[in-house]
Image 1: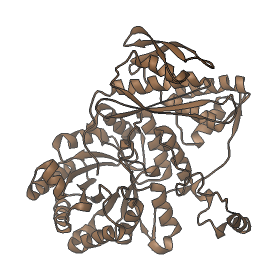
Image 2: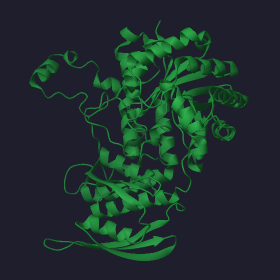
Image 3: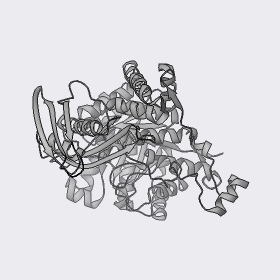
Image 4: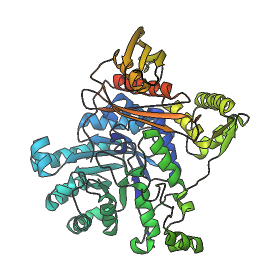
Length: 514
């Protein structure tokens, strides 16, 4: 009988720590709802003590998600654990995930604690978490660079303290597959009681080994894999959920293992996360990339036409891939919009649906037909809109003058914290001039890092989708996005959206991650 491998999704915690991938609370809840449809076993919803926003997102997910375990991350610190419980306690299945670093370099340079002190902190953290809920996970951070004997000592101690899941993280993506698999094998040999709890792994992709290391661990007895949709995460990212799942499914003969994932939801989940985080997917990305089921070479095309099995080891339909692009007209109505969005994993409030439908009808009046991708873009734009209180900067109006043989100029009217201000700028193009006009009125320590423009569908009347990334003086990255038929207005609104996010980020994110 195949063993069950638990899928622990940390897209909303470690994945969101990708630079510029910050999500609103409503966006996090939407992704969590889709992860539940996907069938993940555990959703790590965030790091509650990091900020009020993180706390509220975890709390809302705990209240709204039914079947999966809802987990929050906490350092081995009493205040972190207490805060984590306050956020996850509403869940049907709550979990507290606590951690402390164990490698020599982390103990000596970051914690400045002895081996004994680290073990005491780990044990106390597990016991405190255990006083709140039965389901407690512990991670020895940077286990991949921790001596095996000491790692085993830590694991032995936290199991005795009540940990029900022990996670072995390769925090900096340092290990090689055979080495990491051997570490898991040795853990079971040296700590027999580990067979009475769930042994998990969390691998980073700094050397490109995250999926291979995770699968090597499964081969040597790990029962839970921690991963992110599209492999997003800090630095080079985490193990890719869809790649882990499809390896276990496609090569079930090799792994003798299975998951509870509904693979037909993979493609939809991948696109949803990509769209909401603004992190694109490489065309040649395994399983969910645009080219994953495309064949250009003549010999491949000939083989596929005869039998897809000649060059396709997975069926496109098994991962939910679809090339359809539904067209909606101005007479399609709200129900058609709702059905389309729900089919793609977007669950919006009634007010948001009304705003999307109104925008779709406006666009349909101009363009006659609106395609699926247009509707999704409008929905994402609606979801990304900040609350009244969060809109410290508002665009009141702008004008741009440009043409052949002249320097583009722009003027802008903004409302900043209730006060109307006017600015002007010159640039290399209309967008550049307008951005300089905006920057003339705001804190220059916030810098524009990236400006990306794409047309949603073809044609000169296509919707313009603008995404930007900003960096503040503390090095934090913020994203902004806007969709509009006016490319210049889309650019201005995206910049202001990002500036508002930067201005509202008053609390520094706590250090955390494995």
